[in-house]
Image (cartoon, rainbow, N blue to C red; front, side):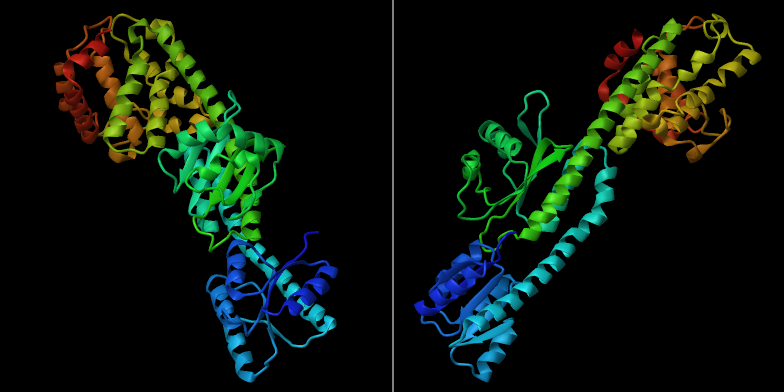
Length: 492
C-alpha cells in the first residue's frame, strides 16, 4: 500500500525532527522543510496528502503559505502548528481553509491523532475526487465506442483528454503494424514540426519503454526520468505529464499522453486514474475502428467486383459505373455535402445498376428498342439492386439511393413515383450523372452524343426528369474542368 505523503513546514529544528520521527514510525512518508518559501517550491512540484504548517516563521508566515496553497488547491488538508493559539489566528486560519490545529508543545499522541484524522479526511476526499473525475467517462464512453472513423476518433480522444485534465498539450501515437514504431495520429498544443521530430528522435525509445512497462507513468517537474525519455525531455518541454500505454488484450497498440507547461499546477493521482480508464476505452475503440475499416475495405472490394460483374455482362456499359461514381462524387462535393455522404453516394453509384444481373441477356444485350414488356423487366432492376445489398451492413445507407435513381423530379419515374425532394439527394445526383454517362456513350441503337448535346439535354429536362440544382452543379463542373478533358474520358 502506498504511504501517505506529509510535508511539515516549521522553523524549529526540534519540531521538524520530532514530527518526522513520530510520523515515520507510523508508516507515513514525511518531508520536512524549515522555511515557507522552500516549502512552497516543494508544494508546487510534488503532491502531498497533508500539510503541517507553523504560523510564525521569519521569512514567510504560515498564513501566507496557506493563502498560496489555497489559490491553487482547495482540497489538500492543512493542520496549523502554533505556540500562540489566539482566537484571531484560529479564525484567520479557518477562513483560509485550515482543517485543524496543533498547539505547541504537543505530545506524540496529539500529533498522531491530528494527522490520522486529517489523513482519513484526505482518503475520503480522494475517493470523492476520483469518482468525480471518472464520472465524465460514463458520459463519453458511448461516443468513443460508436465512432468508427479513425481520424475523427483520434481527434475525439485528444479533445476528451484535454478537457478533463486541463492539459496544455496532448498526443496520441499508435504503433505501426509494419515497422513496430510509434507514429503520431493526433496532437494538440504542439508545434507543426512535432510529428516529424517525434518520429525521428523519440519513436524508437518510447516504443521500447511502453512495451516494457505497460502501466501509466506520471512525470512531475524535477523527476529523474527513465533513459527512454532522454530525447522527449528536450522537445518543447513536454516531459512533465501523464504517459499511458494503450493496450488491447495485453497487446500494446499505442501511447496517449497529456502535458502541462507550468509546474504550478501538477497533475494529480485522480488525473492519472482518469487517463488510465480513458486509455482503456480509447484502445478498445481504436481496435474496433480498425476492424470496421478492414471490414469496410472488404465490402468495397466486393462492390468493385460486383460492379465488374455487371459491366462484364454488358460490353456497351464498360467502365460505366465507375465513371458515374466519379461524376456523382464531383457533384456531391460541389453541393457541399459532408465526406460521409459523399462516400455513401460513391458506393451507391458503383452499384446503382447492380440489379441488372437479374435481367436476361436477351433483354440486356438486345440491339433494338425494347418492348413495353421488356421495359417492365428493366424497370425492376433498381428494386432488385437495393434488395441484393440489404443484408450488407456497411453499405446499408446506399440502398435507398440505388432503389430511387430512376425516379423523375416531376414524379413520373420508377419504381415508386417519388417527386422533388422526396427523392433521396444521392439518387437525384446519380440520375444526372447516369444520364450524362449514357448519352455520351455509344450504344447499339445510337451513337454517343457530344458533350454540348448532352448538356443541352440535361438542361431541357431540368425540373422534369432532373433536379435543377444538381443539373446546374454538374454543368458548372463540366465548364470548370474543360470540355476536352471530359470528352476524352467519356469517349472510351
